[in-house]
Length: 385
Ligand code: NZQ
Ligand code: ZN
Image (cartoon, rainbow, N blue to C red):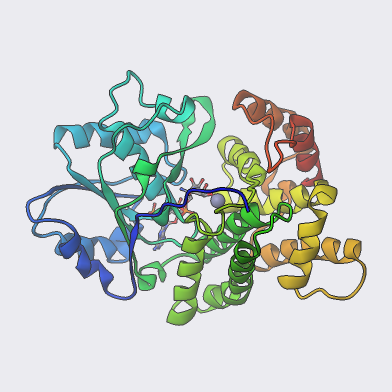
């Protein structure tokens, strides 16, 4: 196991009716900015409950944070927060609203000339306005981690940034607030959480049996409850299990002390920035191709994955590892998430542009051994056609 620092200060308020507990988390009279997305939280009643729980605070609202939140839009919230002297931000929504809020929290006190530097130049976050979240979409883990992915539309860039100052102070996880999700977003959430786990697990053996077992537990749980929660969205136990799995897939626990890959995510971000694929759609396309392209380097873990996650115990290593990749693809497809570039209208002729974008964004040495060069990424995309 490698040396590691593990820090997670986010307090989780899990279960039905926990929104009412916001009243205890936010002091009376505090100036709070509520951030939300395109209106789902208005339609499903979440925002009404939040407003009621914050009746003792001084509330301002900023709606309209879009999926794959954009710098251009978020700067409007930064302006509003400065004008209203926001003391605390409450993000109500999915990963995009929470990520957008992390950027807003860091940008409000940022003293440099251009807040985009926080993302593109990784300018250090010296201060951030404290914030909490009310999660409505299980997928990203953003509710319990300190990272965010921000898009700058004008230049077609989608990039990650983060800071230990950007953990939410608390997150309310009420599974019933996710019942209104359309099937596409539920399936996306299962795929995203699955791929987060794979990015931290499917690398090479690292003498970390506990982290391996945690990851295998999350993967098996997602395989079990994913289809149930998709078919029966209001079955509480399955949904609650899914919500908690997605949070634990990216809150630092399974990744502590182990090598991590993330090449699938970095290539996926380019697909979203250029072609507008949902985040999880991009991952469902890239992951099977990535595992096939890097089969030899990942062979030992692929065999372990085949045995322990998919119960493939017959045949030689090569066969079982290959079958495990196929099972992964079939699982994504069974949820309704397509796994080929051409399913999204992307052709071979588009690949050079994607590789150029990777280069422009500094993505020349990806993966757990930094050996995913632009050439390897090109071959992954070719396999994904
Ligand atoms: O905008 P509204 O109207 O709220 O609708 C949203 C949006 O259209 C809708 N939705 C959310 N909760 C709902 C609901 N609809 C009905 N009922 C509800 N309860 O779902 C749509 C998608 O929302 P979004 O927040 O974009 O989805 P997700 O949570 O999948 O977040 C994706 C973003 O997170 C980033 C992705 O790159 C992408 O930008 N990621 C963030 C990570 C992190 N911070 O750690 C890690 C991930 O790998 C990921 O990259
Ligand atoms: Zn993701």
